[in-house]
Image (cartoon, rainbow, N blue to C red; front, top):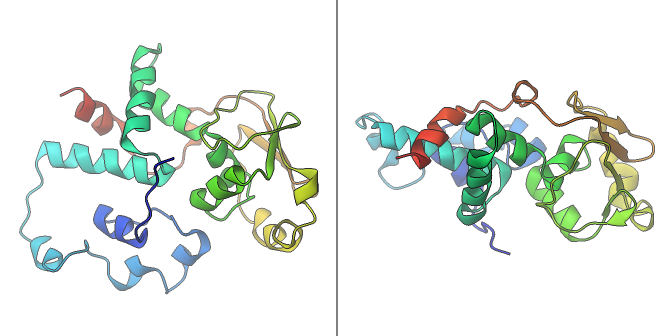
Length: 212
């Protein structure tokens, strides 16, 4: 499985905004974007005042931002876009709904992880069950009425007994999900809608990028 292994704080700096790729650390003064809020590179600080972005540049940056927020590589992202293009409705909104329906994102939204990267690791290590069956595929797309929970054998682990309880109740649950913090369980009430996705994304620029 291909994945990005370099410093993720560089991605936030490159996109010019916080992508919250490190969870709670992004809310502290230790956040690299707070200390160096300009693109990485030897001359990036000077170049940001001289550059006039073209339409292509704006479209590319928005596409890269969406990929990095959800932790998806290019080939898989293209497949999601092709599916959204074939599906009835707005292509950009459908693309975001598919990304939001990924199991790793749902685990993050339920508060079982501090970041999507951590949620992906939890799923890959077999700590999550969907409808009673262990599922270790982060890209698994959940459906309405699916029940997502922590595997019974994993609930006794220190992480799920103490760490999750500290921040699980602090994160608001999206209206398309319900959560039982005591049982470490969540249920998919319906498919997410575009209005449920609170990430600042201009999906039309992504559609324009692939429609060139």
